[in-house]
Each structure stands twice: as structure tokens, then as C-alpha cells.
Length: 427
Image (cartoon, rainbow, N blue to C red):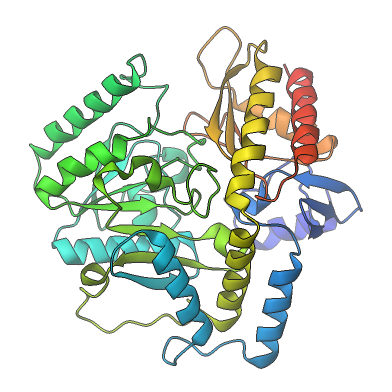
């Protein structure tokens, strides 16, 4: 055991999870690579949990942070803040939500917390619809609506949560149906549910479930849900903490795969926009955002330094068409992974889109989750110089692959080859 690991265990919570039997200390990074305290180099296919969106040590971002820190680091929302206004203008325009207002937070958890506050205040209801297998953060209200028991340590909540079918396409009672039949069955289930309860405040949903193992419904499900929700005045919150900013390749926001009934009433964002700096936020229509009748501020949300980082990072993302790169390189990577795993009995499914890819592992000959295999592949990939993540609502048996969006074709091929060897070694 390293001295740092022993010190970690002595002062930090037991439930603060660490990867690997011999935990890793990452000391620095560049591009799509990071180095540990022993000087080992790794190709990073997890990006600090989908947060290093463009690249490690991106010069444009580090320069913006340094220059802003040299002027002023903090002022709070009690004063005008030019970088915050400029980033809000850009995000409001990109959101697709009409007459949008933006509130900045420091994390995705806090963003979802704020969205739930707005929805319940606006609708005067404490009932929330959430998806099974979902994850929305670690605050008291967020864990209370999370539909994944591995990440929800308490059933106590200020909200009453009702869970809806549809977030997982290939498991559950509707898995055998066609896409059209699947959507119809989920819509019928939602309509039946709403016939038995008072009108909830909102449905909150990840277009692709992140911690849940990169699962997703057929395109159009949430558009069909929205038609039902609108009849009851129920709001739609798109949790874009992991799917936003072009990671899925085909769309800038995950909700755009479900756009037939218009944009969501609110969307939440975080992670990649700061490229490692603490930025989260909510975008909502003006009437929703302005519905609160009490004073509020954010001490750290929208800080000058994080806003400068977000502006530089977003500019780089758009100017270099990283969404297009995610589509091209991600498409190549997912097809390569499907090819190399086609004959492996422990691989149930390779799924995802863009640079948001999951490999679900099962015990060979069964449909039973295989968390031991997932942990073993994580270790084997590390030994060969590749960092990946894991997750999944079915006992943490999904390998999660989400590299920076600037990933090159050569790096995608290298990572796929390492994963091929790691999966075979652990099979």
C-alpha cells in the first residue's frame, strides 16, 4: 500500500470509491494522455468521468484560466461578471430553448438540484417522474430521485418520485419489442401512471444514461413522452450533464434525438464545458427561471476563472468541430469494438454513440451481470496503458468509454486493440 493511499484511508470516507486494487495517482496530462506518480503513461478513455472534454492541458484553456486568475479570481454573483454574461449568452443561444435564461452552479448535482427546485416551485408539486436506472447526482434531492440503488444510499427525500419505463432498451419487460412497439408500450405505461396520481412537476431524464451504463431508448421516446406530459402541464428536464456539448456525435445535445415535440423546458449541464474546472448550470425558459419569489445568489457558481475556462473551451470545441470528430472517430471506435468482441461470450452488448460507448459484460452462457469481469478488464487495460471507466445499473458490469472529443483515429485504434487483449485475457 502506498503512503498516499494509507493517508487517504485515514482521513477520507470509506464510501469515496477508488479505482484499481493499487489506486492510481495522476500527476499530469497532455492531449489524450495522463501520467501517474511513477512516470507511467496512459491513454485516457474516461476523461475524469467525461469531464476532460477537449484535451488535457489544452493551451487555450490554461491560458484563459491563468490570465483571469491574474486579474481577479472571485467576486460572487452579487456583482456584474463579464465572463459569466458572455458564457450565458453563448449557452442560451446553443440550448435551443426559446427566451432562455442560464443559472450557473459548480456541478451537475447542483444543477439538477436547482432544476428540481424550479420545477417544483413553478408547478407547486413535489412529485417527480424519473427513469429507472437513472443517476442525477449525490445531493439529498438528487439521490432521492436516482433510479439506481447502487448510487442512492437513502430512500428519504423531500420529493415523491415515480419511476418510468424506457431508459434501458435491451432489458426489462419491453426489451423484445421493436423500437416502435417499445416506444408505444412506454408511452402507454406513462399514460396509465398519470391516471393514478396527481400531476407531477416534471420528468427528469438523461437522453443517454451515464452511470447507468450508457443505455438509451430508441430515438423519439422523449418526444412521445413530451406529447403526453404537455397535456398535463408537466415539465421536461433533460439532464445533459454527460450527453451535452456534442459528445454523442450526431447531436450537440442528447435531447435533439427526441426533438419532434420541441426542446425541453429545462436542460442541465456540467462536466465537459469546464474541461476540468467546476462548472454546472441550468437553462430554462424565462418564466420558469424567474418563478422563484425569494432571494438567491451563488457564491461560487459563475466564478470569473471558471467562466473564462468555459468560454475558451467552448470556443475550441466549436472552432475545431469536435462534435464532428466524435461522430467520425466514435463511429470507427464502436464498430472496431463490436468486431473484436463479436465472438466473446462474456460481452452481451457494445452500445452507445459518438464517444460515449459502453461494453456490457455477463457471465458466459447467461444474462447475469459480471462485475468481477468488469473489474478485471479495468485492471488489465491499466496494465497495458489504458484508463477506462465502469458502471451500469446491473451490478456495475459495463465498461464505460468516453475519451476527450479530440481523440485521433490512431488513438482510437490503439485503445480498441488494448481493450481486445484485456477482454480476452479476462475471459
